[in-house]
Image 1 (cartoon, rainbow, N blue to C red):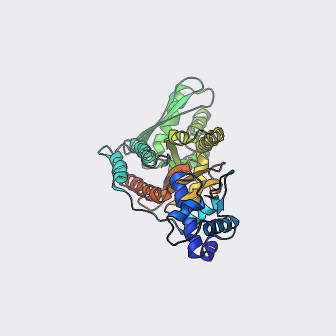
Image 2: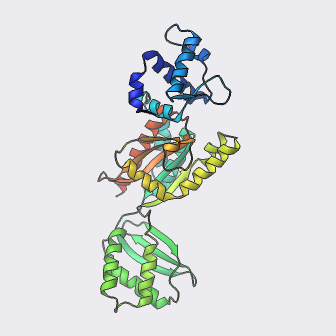
Image 3: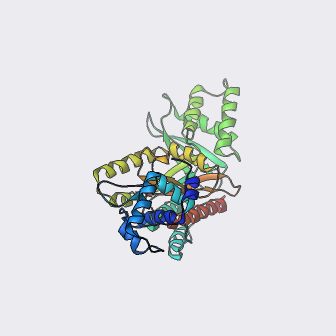
Length: 354
């Protein structure tokens, strides 16, 4: 298909109005739109035959399609893209939606993880889609680190941050660990961590380990490396992905293939790395982005749309994302301001905490 804005400019007023009305009607009802329906409330007196011709032209341009044997038309993925880019009217955020999202922050905003969970649930509630919140890794300086043996093949690494936040991660330690090698490893780390964040620590420690190879016991060295590896990996900039409201996507369909597509969607979502990559895409310009169907590289399926906005910390650095997933016939005009507001709220919440 040619460039969407060029096609939009080439359409005359009548074609543009027919196209806009087909899309708006489809987004509300999900049903194909016929020429008779459009004739009834068209702004000028035109026959159903005239409108049928216009719809055929729009179909020829790749903006509308006819599903099955229906006489009506629905927008194609390219048509939806063009509508969203050129004709979408974004409404103001409704007071009820704002209250529902604000209420999740409440007085207990110290528990950021809990608040983000509740924001995800509120977002899926008000949009009737599934929501996703990608949360940043905790970046406060570390106060203390501890290794705890849970058996011969499981150990716990405990991090206490200077702001009181505690994180525990289970990992597989190298074989042969003894209580004294675990103590030695923890002492070595605690001597270095004063005032450092996790990402600072990883650089310092690898340097120190190679410099003091003889000094530090090999078991303790292996333990430090495998314990710290728990916080590394391809998606280590992000702590976790919160997805709420899966049932909303399932309740809107009964078709076997739709259920299968939604299952694949959630399999894709489990791979947080894809979202991290996709966030870098959003990094090119902060603000709400809309991905429709198969143009959304996050999902290996078409048939879902994602409305997403990155959020920033106090230094204006993108540290996570908030979004809504739903069928391609989402009410984009209403959902865009909700996602925008939520992303700003989350960014402020995290900046205030740090």
